[in-house]
Length: 115
Image (tube, rainbow, N blue to C red; front, side, top):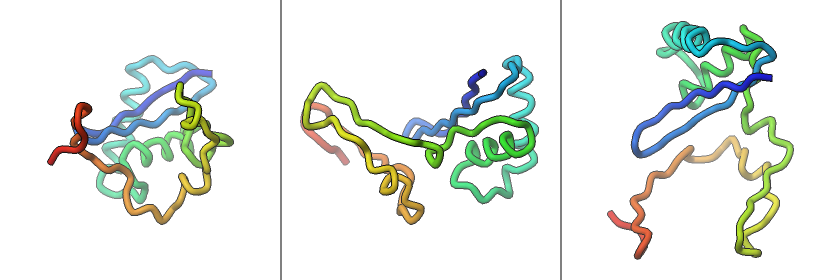
């Protein structure tokens, strides 16, 4: 099994997706395949992000497996703080009616939020 990753974003918000394939592609082959899909769909996709749209195309037409959140079986939050360890509620996390995908916030680690 070979793993591939797509990144999208800027300095404020950053997203990535993972893909799996039974065959190994060179980095250049994978890049060329992604670019050809991007050029074809970049102005007309229905997914939330361009990388998700490309991942869907790679899965449908090129036998990749898009490791999307909808495929998660379990999610566990892990921390040194005992009360911060828990099994996540996947149904709530995968709520299709969520109002946002990311919420950028300026944060000052010494005192809290800044504007």
